[in-house]
Length: 152
View 1 (cartoon, one colour):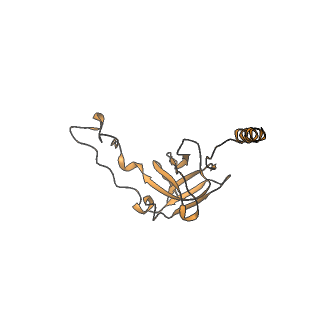
View 2 (spheres, rainbow, N blue to C red; view 1 turned 45 degrees about the vertical axis):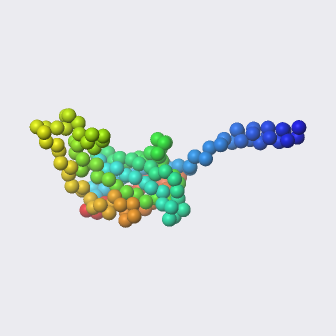
């Protein structure tokens, strides 16, 4: 009988506190610039840095025309895991109107049998390489917006 009461008490505590092992997130907003000027249409990926003790799923955001972005966690919640991150950038302008999904084309992208040729990236590949990226940030609750200034 006593074991049943202890189990019921334990179960009640577990239900009240929840069984969530969801990571702690903090809101991350920022701006991507190139030599101080806003850089639109860039994908920003924050990857937890295991070398600094942070692990888990990364967060992503895309810049608007003014270079501003807000990160979303892998499950769609706003923010990024609290801790250290490596940040990589992808220049989405290189694709232009080219559809890069399954089939790699759309009928409306075809013009007389010609497909648009992807453009050259506006910044070097080192910014897109997780091992070489110069961009590293510590995500903390209540942090100021980050500024990522890309050098050409």
